[in-house]
Length: 70
Image (spheres, rainbow, N blue to C red):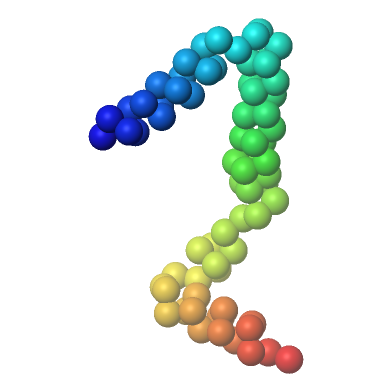
């Protein structure tokens, strides 16, 4: 457990001693990742299987049918 603690302290200490501009760059990176993974998924990749089918069996049959269709 001390190994994990020392690794965590290494990164925490590194972020504390970063210059202000570097922290701003990390904030920008994290905001962009949030937009890419959460916002875009919500609006552009809806869960069609959950919406159109009630059971797991219906979903599985639909996926198998789509995969094996020519």
